[in-house]
Image (cartoon, rainbow, N blue to C red):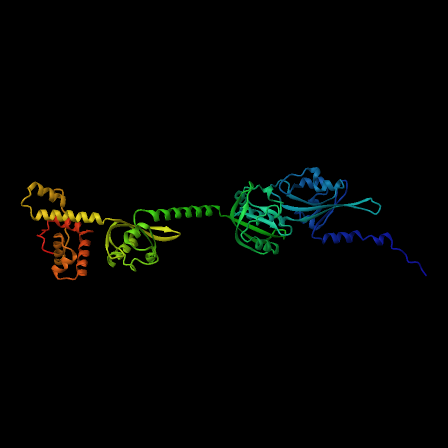
Length: 500
């Protein structure tokens, strides 16, 4: 039996031309070097990664290459001539994953970003056979990363990025550093276990389960730990995303709730102070809704003035309890609020629970309570003062009707007290009154009540009230005393009081 011949050395070694063809089809750049610094060959991918068409354009030696291209480490730090990947490879140094920025000599900005690897190939006997520089074009990847970094850092919202593979913080922007007071080095590279932003989250367990599954974490309140051991109230949310290198991550965004929290506390304290002042104020006060005029609150002084109980008025409308003497008065007050939002010193008559009327000066202002527009009304009881005024007017009238025993000097002083004389040369505005309004005014000046005027003129009491209301509106009077003074100023004769 013939002995099988072993393959020859030539058969075991692939043809160099075939190797060159294989290398030229690779997407990675391949440059072969000799230990003395000559560039033996470069495939098409390596030439394209340097913007060259031929090996001569690239440089046939390491020195020629360094004259055509400047290399810097990623981040801008210069590489010395003896520390370039080719120089290190010529010293038979191997290296993996060295990232360099490459720019044509004379330009300022890098043209490419290369990820380079150096291989030293030896023969079976350990003799040096070949030095190989393998280049991967990472320009697009790093440009995408730069765009991502730029957008992330420019985002004014405080943000952190956690890599899902190991829950390690890989990015933090200036907004988060300003919000928290932490330094970048205290965040980057640490894990969620070292710096647990979810420890005091509103729904911590749910948030951590969603983070583990890489799902969206909805907005929730949390306490963010601060360097000094304190914490800050924030609103956080998590959004799943991918880094430029396709690594799954979670982007956490934050909103500072401390200003809102302080504002809410201040508002709450302010409303508590208002409630206390409102409740114990000596002036009767009423709080109603602007929409619908429903009574929201009354104070102790109001209840004492009207003899109503708290539960009997709160939640109802003034019309329901007939708070004012007439519906016309209530509508007039609502009209004033609707037109100007406030009024001062408007004379009204409140109706107490028993039906008694209390003359008051009312003032009102539109305010905001618990985010609701309300009307705050205050009432000054002037019933006693009005009685005093009416008694004084009655005394003056009585004296002037029977003045035979008074001197002219006393009469002049009484007249001046009752109706001060207008300055000489001044004219008082005239008002057109109907015959019935003049009759009503004449009886008012005689001190007649509404019932007495109704009996004298043969009218109903409500009709007399309507005439009095229109008369007050025309002469801008708010009381009988003002009407009497108005009539006296204009020379209206006050006839002798008739029996009532």
